[in-house]
Image 1 (cartoon, one colour):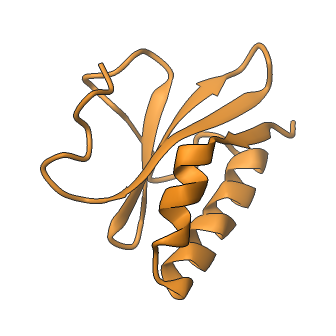
Image 2: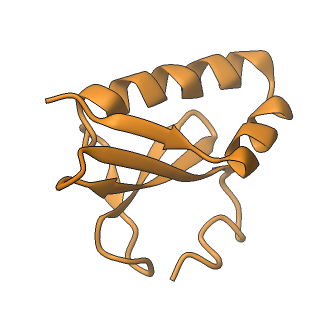
Image 3: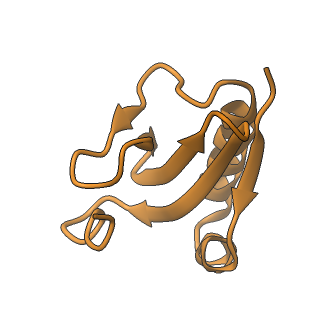
Amino acid sequence: MVYQVKVGSQVRKAMTRLPIKARARILAAFRKLAEEPRPVGCQPVKMALKGTYRLRVSNYRVIYTVRDDERLVIVARVIKRGEHTYKGLG
């Protein structure tokens, strides 16, 4: 079952500021999310809506929502892990 991965303009903009190696790893993670939206290592985000997950990619976190009925993965944020990583998700 293949899912469509949607990446918003803010995420694209944030991706341009990342180092090339990190960007390549994150893009590879996006492709894997299309095949398996809940891969080994993903965690539900406790303070966000149901269906929101985080995936660790090196020092970065990919925060996304899965909509199984639409077979859609929406990437909400790609950010370096820090104290502001999960603010504003709830």
